[in-house]
Length: 298
Image 1 (cartoon, one colour):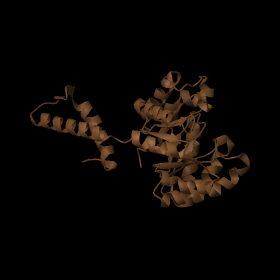
Image 2 (image 1 turned 60 degrees about the horizontal axis):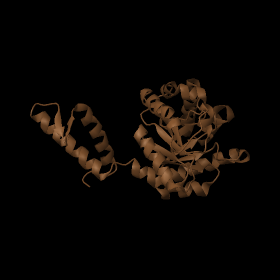
Image 3 (image 1 turned 30 degrees about the horizontal axis):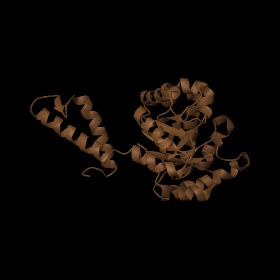
Image 4 (image 1 turned 90 degrees about the vertical axis):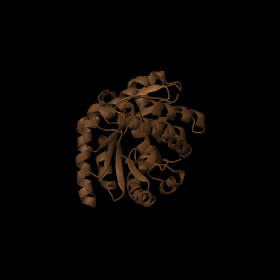
């Protein structure tokens, strides 16, 4: 499943929306039990979410669930929605490693109760508190289940992260660059190799702004985007998929390096640049993803 290019949020109390989500082409869907569900509907949303997970799994789409914060019912959410087809849990308001470990333990119990393979359900941590944002590497390291830290790259409408840090977001985004880059590094340094960027804070129909923010996420090192509207999915899938030009360039680079090795050299001049093992490893990563997407030979 990993890396995931696109994750689409869908409210957990709207089964018809969940059922329709796969037609928009996301690699995964995040059924939301937190901010998108009215308080009065949260209990009923758990059973709807279980049904939604089964529908997503049948459609071959990764089924994730954003639970409520642990002190607001998140542990009970976890047991209620532990069911075959569940791929992962997104933990909002992540603050301490102890919270991540508590979720890990509850997931272990839930997996056993539901007959799931131990350790099969992943965790994505979403730090939205000053403590969690400052110590995101510790969150990533707290459990082997953690696949990535979720950062936020947003436009001028602020959310939890902007409030926690105190910055005023802009579409230009210079005020967010330090934090966005830090969370990528924290995730990878914490052995959670798939940091994801939540794209928020713009007009839904402003696809140029969405493209700009998703492109920024890719440039900063995120491996995919978490999205709030179906119209944004195609943009993330496009930008996080190697292009034909990249496949051609890196295929040529690897071939040139292999020829250099055969002649007893560990570096070679390729299209005007000197490349060595570091560049080859990067190129091979691009080509692996291209192969996974069926793009080699295009």
